[in-house]
Length: 435
Image (cartoon, rainbow, N blue to C red; front, side, top):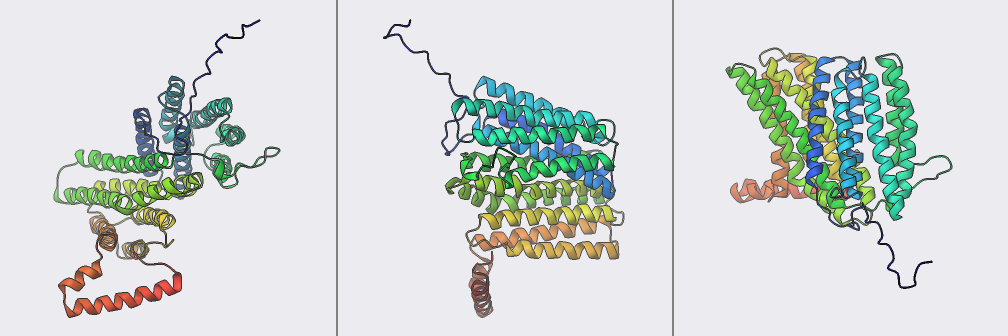
């Protein structure tokens, strides 16, 4: 029998972060982990280029959805688990290896490497979720209930992934995997509702909002970095003729403008919203887990367009280039606009982004009809992004109307009166202000 004054055994140290919803630093291991996803996004871009058909585009979309889902769930995991603990590091490195295998299998995911892709993806999602469920239950963490449901969901959908890998190749496999992906994407919206287990509320997801915002911003950098890599690698393998040099300049300028459009206003506003919101888990789900999907997808699309443009800058604008260039740019602008609308106190979609979408649609129609040189269409697309960037920057950094009012005298004052009347009309109608 133990003596009354015997020292009790020390409690096991927690493997979870102790941020309590406050700031949590991004670790070096998380940055190291992201390197795999630079490769994964490059693989997706090459997959699109190798499968220029509607079926190929659907397959690429499914692969992108899986890659994003694997990354974002790991981001949620590192928001809770402490990467400085050895056990967590081992888990992350194992997930990193599974992600690398998944990325390697991407080019032939719908033919010879289907089983490799599916097994690595399922091992990634189920293995990480089991680990999180265990350490959360051990510490009686408020989100433990959610993690048990997430583990159950990935186990169920994992069966569909494996079944799809054994199914016929091509469209049949796409159908199996789309069903699995649809169930997984519906999970957070439905509160991971499962039979006999009920559902959970986002209020139970105690996370560090600052960490989530920083991690997603870093993934945007990853995607833009992949676009820069594609641009540089493609140009390096060509002769430095005037058309190729101009195409290289257009691709680089477009990447810079896409960075500016996201980071000048959107990233800061989103970070401030999630850091101070009473339910950061809800913001993390809506604004970051879901609304960042079209942002990253748009960057991947424009990376494909850059490679096409650099390969044949003097050729006529082909439908595939129009789809990648105008479609990718439109998806990006729409995604960033919705993200900014979510983080905007007036809840309005930026006017500059709205007109940018209209101009991209007009450019797509004109390019399809007139079939101009690819270089012309490429620079016009860059010009549209430049217009959106300048419009938004001027609106939030002193205002273009105010600048013109000071410089153009009576004309500027007239423009100011017209602008004020239009803003008052819009405010009365929509209850918001344009950017």
